[in-house]
Length: 118
Image (tube, rainbow, N blue to C red; front, side, top):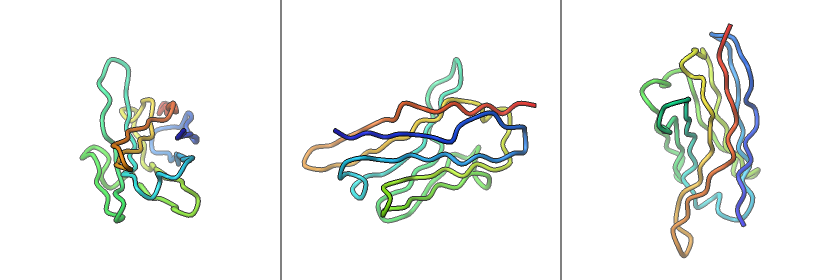
């Protein structure tokens, strides 16, 4: 059974920084596109950033230049460094692992709250 465990959320002032971590159990990490999504109250879940197995990345326009996704394959962990945070970044952030290993898979973490407020 694959588990994704997020950590690093919290309350931060506008302009501040946070780093989210997502640790993946099981043997899928190297076969996965790892992504961070977020869902604000009353809104749909949206893609924030993802990193592909070859190491390429893409980002939502709203976070380009402020957020950086990275991975540590030895630790089966993906990170989201968030800088210059804005109140509109407030949301529950979810880690996602998606790919194919015999069958397609799509796993989600439990989410971590990020609140940007003064």
